[in-house]
Amino acid sequence: MTSQPRTWTLLGADRNPYESDRPGGLGGHRKSRIYGRLDCPGARRAIARGGYVANRVFFLDEAAAIAAGYRPCAVCMRERYDEWKADPIAFAGKRIAWPGGLRGV
Image (cartoon, rainbow, N blue to C red; front, side, top):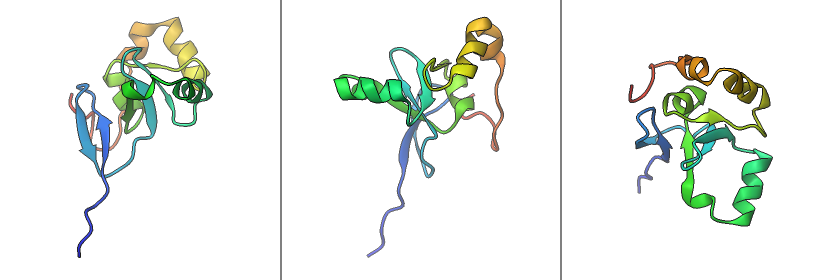
């Protein structure tokens, strides 16, 4: 019997979900449009309280999260958050390239 390859549902730059053969490197919250590390203490606390999981999304990397209009988490990505806070428009204009270009843009 041939096993199906594992896939993960990620959110693309166009904010639409797609199946990927690679797991997401960052997590996010759909309603607040915040992204951060998968081990973020703030996200873990929110998950433990409940209600957060229904709005949880995953991104291949930071470039996809930024392109989708999400901002960095102030808890687990403080330096990136400070950069965003200082100039959100300039930060959003920074499209961090990855091999294959921006998905959905």
